[in-house]
Amino acid sequence: MSQKSYESEGLYRFSIIAPLINETFAKGELKKKIRELAGKHYEHPLRGWEKFAFKTIEEWLYNYRRCGLSGLEKSRRKDTGLSRSISPEIGELILTMKKENPKRSAGRIIKELAMAGKTRPGEMKRSSVYRLLSNHRQELKAHGEERKQIRKFAFEFSNECWQSDVCHGPYLYIEGHRNKRKIYLYAFIDDASRIIPHMGIAFAENLENFLECLKTGIQKKGIPHRLYLDNAAYYRSPVVSTIGARLGIKVIYCTPYSPYKKGKIERFWRTCREGFLSCLDRNRRYTLAELNRLAQMWVEKDYHHNIHSSLGKSPLEAWQSKAQNINYPDIERLERDFLAEESRKVRKDGTFSLKGTCCEADTMLAGEKVTVRYNPFKRDRVFVYLKDQFMQEAKAADEIENSKAQRQPVPDLQKPVSSGINFLDLLQKEEKSDV
Image (tube, rainbow, N blue to C red):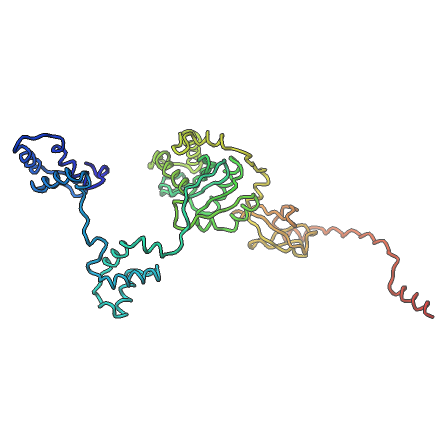
């Protein structure tokens, strides 16, 4: 019996006495057969090789005849669940202390009991307290913090929810690098169809690579209604929530220390390790572009066409059958929506400062409070908005060039039409009428 197939002590004992069960023995033959079994060695999946006495095997046989398989199971001790080193009174006190403050550790409980004079220093061991608390786990849970009900969930249609996570890949030889570099895999999985909108590979785990992967996924499969993310610092960046608000995406964060809530993307990473990462040659020198091409080829040509056990169909077939009202974005607008945003006041000379760079806008915006969108990682292009309306693309101010440029004269303003009403004239008329 292998360790994998080992389920209980009763089944192991039954495998030993099995030759005695359905046989009819002549007088004296049964004892002879039991002695044969007692002379053999048996391999226990956990304890290794062992041998049993005649009386032991005989007792197992009669117990099986009386009670069936349950008669072969190990009998539980009468004092199971009770601590032999901790008195009932101290045990109740320990449970009360744990219920009172669930964060009390075993070491702290022992120390406090000794300080209170309930026990002597060194009298109680941590293992005894751990065992006591373990035996009353359910009772302590009932008095612990209120827990939310956990249920298995799935969305009905494609793009209702995307889950995202990062997988730490292997170290590989990369062109242009002397030593091996670790790769990081970014991916999104559609909850309803299990399709992968996009999977990208980078050399770092940061906000820039995540946003680039998200933007590519949206270009391929449309805008998701929800985005279910981990609690990494870059996921919590205000840039992510701002982009989500612009595109109408509800950004949801997973409860800390609960990876099972992102089970679909976690299961995909297992498939990715077995089907893609395991096939990469650790001694070959790749380029980053080549790795991304191979990753996309594996996703599109293999993963999307394999039957998914929980769906009964391939992710590609599931996507096609569940796709309804997919919202694809305008590419030019999408580029602007994936920019960081800050507010700035334009100076009298038409300039404003952005991350230490002096940018130049139209002088007509002087004195206005504008919204500035820019790529926080490159800052190569800066877009100026006034009251959510795009005004212009700002550029870096060249002070020396501005000193040489000829100023344009301010055009004469048209004089306003006279209303014909003057306060002093009105007063003078009133004075004359009073005379």
